Image 1 (tube, rainbow, N blue to C red):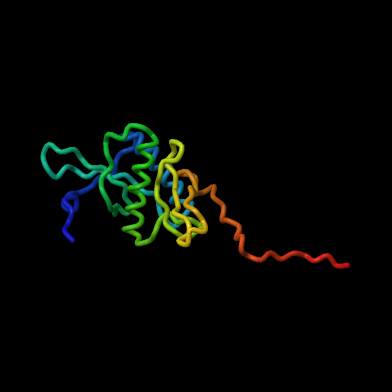
Image 2: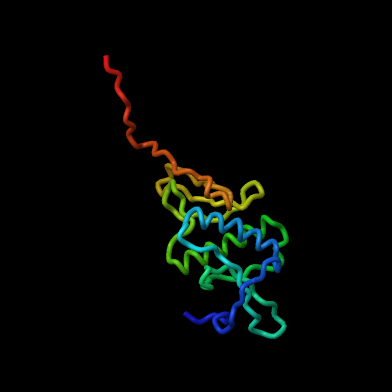
Length: 165
Protein backbone atom coordinates (compact mmCIF):
# COMPACT_ATOMS: atom_id res chain seq x y z
CA UNK A 1 0.00 0.00 0.00
CA UNK A 2 1.41 3.38 -0.97
CA UNK A 3 1.39 6.20 1.56
CA UNK A 4 -1.10 8.96 0.98
CA UNK A 5 0.18 12.50 0.36
CA UNK A 6 -1.82 13.43 3.48
CA UNK A 7 0.51 11.29 5.60
CA UNK A 8 3.27 13.88 5.24
CA UNK A 9 1.15 16.83 6.37
CA UNK A 10 0.18 17.88 9.87
CA UNK A 11 -3.59 18.11 10.29
CA UNK A 12 -5.21 20.71 12.52
CA UNK A 13 -8.58 20.64 14.26
CA UNK A 14 -11.23 22.65 12.42
CA UNK A 15 -12.40 25.52 14.59
CA UNK A 16 -16.06 25.79 15.51
CA UNK A 17 -17.88 27.93 12.96
CA UNK A 18 -15.24 27.48 10.26
CA UNK A 19 -17.63 25.20 8.32
CA UNK A 20 -21.05 25.47 9.99
CA UNK A 21 -22.77 22.88 7.76
CA UNK A 22 -20.13 20.30 8.58
CA UNK A 23 -20.21 21.24 12.28
CA UNK A 24 -23.96 20.63 12.34
CA UNK A 25 -23.68 17.42 10.33
CA UNK A 26 -20.94 16.05 12.56
CA UNK A 27 -23.00 16.80 15.69
CA UNK A 28 -25.84 14.72 14.20
CA UNK A 29 -23.50 11.83 13.26
CA UNK A 30 -21.91 11.96 16.72
CA UNK A 31 -25.38 11.27 18.18
CA UNK A 32 -25.39 7.97 16.29
CA UNK A 33 -21.85 7.19 17.40
CA UNK A 34 -22.77 7.83 21.05
CA UNK A 35 -25.89 5.66 20.73
CA UNK A 36 -24.09 2.71 19.16
CA UNK A 37 -20.50 2.97 20.42
CA UNK A 38 -20.83 4.79 23.75
CA UNK A 39 -17.21 4.05 24.68
CA UNK A 40 -15.97 6.18 21.75
CA UNK A 41 -15.34 9.87 22.14
CA UNK A 42 -16.96 12.18 19.54
CA UNK A 43 -15.54 12.41 16.05
CA UNK A 44 -13.86 15.63 14.97
CA UNK A 45 -13.18 17.58 11.81
CA UNK A 46 -9.56 18.02 10.75
CA UNK A 47 -8.04 20.25 8.10
CA UNK A 48 -4.98 19.04 6.22
CA UNK A 49 -2.98 21.66 4.36
CA UNK A 50 -2.71 21.32 0.59
CA UNK A 51 0.28 19.26 -0.50
CA UNK A 52 0.62 21.26 -3.71
CA UNK A 53 0.70 25.02 -3.99
CA UNK A 54 -2.58 26.48 -5.21
CA UNK A 55 -4.64 23.53 -3.98
CA UNK A 56 -7.21 23.99 -1.19
CA UNK A 57 -6.85 22.44 2.24
CA UNK A 58 -8.62 19.12 2.67
CA UNK A 59 -11.16 18.48 5.44
CA UNK A 60 -11.57 15.07 7.04
CA UNK A 61 -13.65 13.29 9.68
CA UNK A 62 -11.37 11.80 12.35
CA UNK A 63 -11.54 9.90 15.61
CA UNK A 64 -10.90 11.95 18.75
CA UNK A 65 -7.30 10.65 18.60
CA UNK A 66 -6.83 12.34 15.23
CA UNK A 67 -6.79 9.10 13.25
CA UNK A 68 -8.83 9.15 10.05
CA UNK A 69 -9.43 7.18 6.88
CA UNK A 70 -10.96 7.92 3.51
CA UNK A 71 -11.21 10.89 1.26
CA UNK A 72 -11.79 14.55 2.02
CA UNK A 73 -15.12 16.31 2.38
CA UNK A 74 -16.13 18.41 -0.60
CA UNK A 75 -16.45 22.15 -0.16
CA UNK A 76 -19.28 22.39 -2.70
CA UNK A 77 -21.82 20.60 -0.46
CA UNK A 78 -24.11 23.49 0.33
CA UNK A 79 -27.30 21.89 1.64
CA UNK A 80 -27.66 20.43 5.13
CA UNK A 81 -28.79 17.06 3.70
CA UNK A 82 -25.80 16.83 1.33
CA UNK A 83 -23.38 17.80 4.11
CA UNK A 84 -24.95 15.27 6.49
CA UNK A 85 -24.75 12.46 3.96
CA UNK A 86 -21.13 13.24 3.16
CA UNK A 87 -20.08 13.54 6.81
CA UNK A 88 -21.91 10.31 7.71
CA UNK A 89 -20.12 8.44 4.92
CA UNK A 90 -16.74 9.86 5.95
CA UNK A 91 -17.43 9.00 9.60
CA UNK A 92 -18.34 5.46 8.64
CA UNK A 93 -15.09 5.08 6.67
CA UNK A 94 -13.03 6.35 9.59
CA UNK A 95 -14.76 4.31 12.29
CA UNK A 96 -14.75 1.12 10.22
CA UNK A 97 -11.14 1.34 9.08
CA UNK A 98 -9.52 2.77 12.21
CA UNK A 99 -11.43 0.75 14.82
CA UNK A 100 -11.60 -2.35 12.62
CA UNK A 101 -15.29 -2.86 13.16
CA UNK A 102 -18.42 -2.44 11.11
CA UNK A 103 -20.36 0.69 12.00
CA UNK A 104 -23.25 1.24 12.28
CA UNK A 105 -24.80 -2.22 12.52
CA UNK A 106 -28.46 -3.07 11.91
CA UNK A 107 -29.79 -4.60 15.11
CA UNK A 108 -32.27 -6.68 13.09
CA UNK A 109 -29.77 -8.38 10.81
CA UNK A 110 -26.35 -7.79 12.40
CA UNK A 111 -25.20 -6.26 9.11
CA UNK A 112 -23.40 -3.02 8.43
CA UNK A 113 -25.60 -0.22 7.17
CA UNK A 114 -24.91 2.45 4.58
CA UNK A 115 -26.18 5.98 4.03
CA UNK A 116 -28.89 6.55 1.46
CA UNK A 117 -31.15 9.49 0.85
CA UNK A 118 -34.74 8.59 1.60
CA UNK A 119 -37.48 11.21 1.17
CA UNK A 120 -34.83 13.94 1.16
CA UNK A 121 -33.17 12.74 4.40
CA UNK A 122 -29.90 10.85 4.75
CA UNK A 123 -30.79 7.55 6.38
CA UNK A 124 -29.06 4.38 7.54
CA UNK A 125 -30.08 1.62 5.13
CA UNK A 126 -29.72 -2.15 5.66
CA UNK A 127 -29.55 -4.72 2.84
CA UNK A 128 -31.78 -7.15 4.77
CA UNK A 129 -31.22 -10.84 5.29
CA UNK A 130 -28.98 -12.80 2.95
CA UNK A 131 -31.73 -15.33 2.22
CA UNK A 132 -34.08 -12.54 1.04
CA UNK A 133 -36.71 -13.45 3.62
CA UNK A 134 -36.38 -9.96 5.03
CA UNK A 135 -36.09 -7.18 2.45
CA UNK A 136 -33.77 -4.19 2.46
CA UNK A 137 -35.03 -1.44 4.74
CA UNK A 138 -34.27 1.92 6.29
CA UNK A 139 -33.33 1.51 9.95
CA UNK A 140 -33.42 5.20 10.87
CA UNK A 141 -32.57 8.67 9.69
CA UNK A 142 -28.95 9.63 10.35
CA UNK A 143 -28.80 11.05 13.86
CA UNK A 144 -31.72 9.00 15.14
CA UNK A 145 -30.15 5.62 15.93
CA UNK A 146 -30.72 6.39 19.61
CA UNK A 147 -34.47 6.12 18.99
CA UNK A 148 -34.28 2.64 17.46
CA UNK A 149 -35.32 0.00 19.92
CA UNK A 150 -34.07 -3.57 19.71
CA UNK A 151 -36.60 -5.55 17.70
CA UNK A 152 -38.89 -8.17 19.11
CA UNK A 153 -37.85 -11.56 17.91
CA UNK A 154 -40.82 -12.92 15.97
CA UNK A 155 -39.53 -16.50 16.01
CA UNK A 156 -38.87 -16.57 19.72
CA UNK A 157 -41.36 -18.56 21.76
CA UNK A 158 -43.34 -16.52 24.21
CA UNK A 159 -44.23 -17.78 27.59
CA UNK A 160 -47.91 -17.56 28.24
CA UNK A 161 -49.58 -18.15 31.51
CA UNK A 162 -51.97 -20.94 31.05
CA UNK A 163 -55.36 -20.48 32.50
CA UNK A 164 -55.76 -22.84 35.34
CA UNK A 165 -59.20 -24.24 35.57
